[in-house]
Image (cartoon, rainbow, N blue to C red; front, side, top):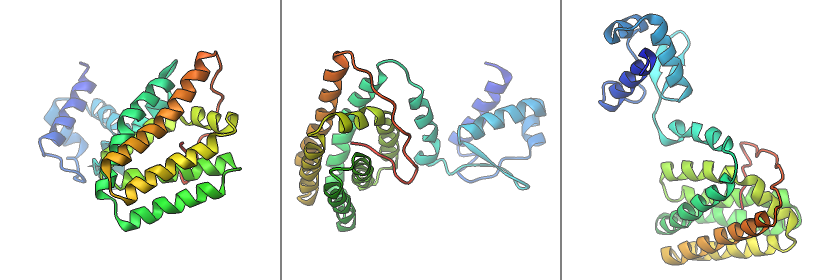
Length: 244
C-alpha cells in the first residue's frame, strides 16, 4: 500500500471504530497528519480521495467532516461505476434486477402504507393515460417502481436498485419503441403488481414483479441473440428517472 492508501485506510478505520461518527469533524489537518506519521500533502490526497467517495465532505471555512454515511450517500458512486460497464453487462444487470426487484416488491407488500399505495396508483393511472407516449410512459413507470421500493423502508436496497435499473434504461426504452404491444403488456403487468400490493400479499407481489422483469429480460435476450444492438437513449433527468 502507498502511504496515501494507508492514510485512507486509517481514516476509514477511525470511522468504523466510532472515533469519527457520522457528521463529526476531523481533527485539524496538521494534527491528523502528525498522528498518522504523514506529510500534510499526503494527508490532503487521502482526504480528497475520501471526499470523492462521499465518506468526507469539506465545509469551506469550517473544516472537514464525516458525511452522514447513509446508504444513499455512500452508494452514490455506484451509479457512475455501473454506467461505465462494458460488453454484455446490460444482460447481467438485468439478471441482477430480476434477483432483487421481486424480493423488494414482496417486502414492500408487507410494509406499504395507504399513502404509499396512493402514490403507486397515481403513477399507474398516469401510465394508462400515456400509452401513446413512450417517454412519458417510462417516466411514470420509473416513478411507480421507485414508490414501490421506497415502501420497503430499506434505503440500501432502494439505492442499489436505482443504480442497477438506471444502466438498463437504453434496453428498456428500445423495447418500448420497437415493440408495438409493449405498452399494453407493461401496464397490465404493473396493474398485477399494484393489485398484489393492495392485497398486502408478498407472495403474489413477488410473483407479479418477477413476471414483469422476466418479460423485459426475455425480449432483450431474443433481440440481442439476433445480432441487434441496443441504441443509445437519453439520460434520465434527476426528477424524471425512467424504467420499465
